[in-house]
Image (tube, rainbow, N blue to C red; front, side, top):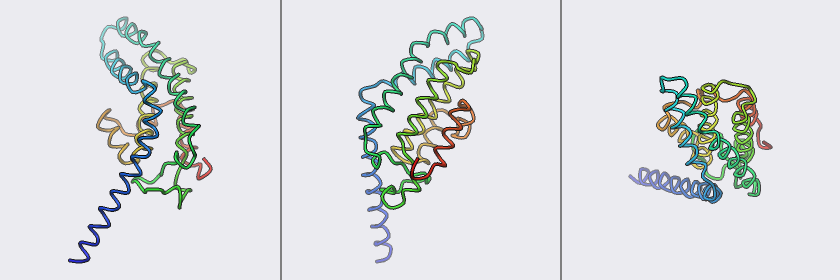
Amino acid sequence: MDIVLTLLAIVVAWRLLCLQYQRGHIALLGRHLARLQIERHMETLTQGYTRAIHEKDTSRQLQILDGFSQTERTVAAQLRTLAEAMRTEDEQATRMGILPFCVPYLERFLPTSTRDFRALLDIHAQGLRRVVDNADRWGPKERAYHLSAELYLMQHSCHWYCKSRSVADVRLSVRHQVTRQKVLDSVSDETRQAYLRWLRSGAGG
């Protein structure tokens, strides 16, 4: 009985420590996001793209997609602002564990198992801007598809930083009915390659 109570106490203490650690990450990111409207613009775009893709009339479809050009430019600019703002934060506060589950303060005792969220935001900001500018000269539907993937991957990264990779995976699946691997396969080649390099980068990433 004493063993059971001891184990239960350890589990509760661990969970409380995780929550405290995650609240710190949520508060830090939330402080910067509060001055922006990235989430609102992302919702506008993803819902609009879905509506356009299901539009049977091609001319109407293109008209809908063209109507989001200003929102696309705005969200790309705001994501760059977020990435630059996060660069002012202390590196230790922006480290995120690459394990599937949350390990509080992993950056203090096993930094090689963490990565820098600031660098990841830079990747997302560059990737989104590239797709918004249509550097690869995609058609409107294809461009909207890739832009949605860039937004989904960025959102996944924010949830990963705030909670854990497994929680981010679940939220991506529930909200958008897609896996991280599918999203990663759907972003631009430049974003995918940079993301994979970041993942392999080690403590100095």
